[in-house]
Length: 142
Ligand code: THU
Image 1 (tube, rainbow, N blue to C red):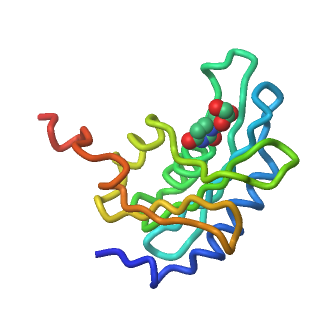
Image 2 (image 1 turned 45 degrees about the horizontal axis):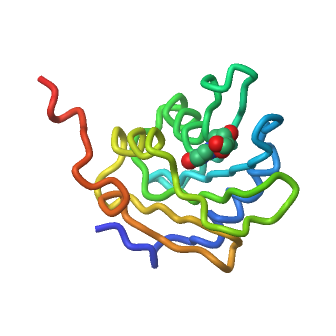
Image 3 (image 1 turned 135 degrees about the horizontal axis):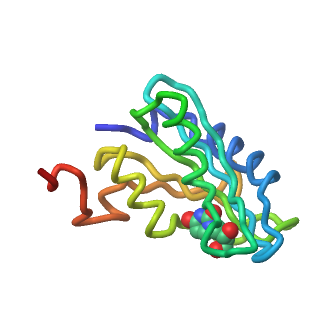
């Protein structure tokens, strides 16, 4: 079972906050950063990248996942997420959207840890099974 105490959550949150500075958000002005920790200890960060065709926007979490998977990583322990209005510090915890939860479900086990953060000192952690119960996964497809 994955344990938050074995993870340097504050360091992971700081990576998410740093990545958030690169968010491309000319439409919503809502900037998100994410930092994904692989099983072998590497961190892949990501930000949200918007598009004038709004549906082409990519969330920060998926940017981090797709960067990691495209580099050959498939096993993950935790992700830290921080979001809020551009140029301001996060005032609320930014929970991952449904599409990003489904991407987590593709690559992560039930005990994958999701850390939602306002700062490196103020964060909460959940397990994937808590935020995506009864999820649909590839094991159902023959
Ligand atoms: N966004 C994320 O990056 N992650 C989420 O989990 C929720 C939403 C982004 C998408 C869009 O650029 C902006 O936040 C407003 O929806």
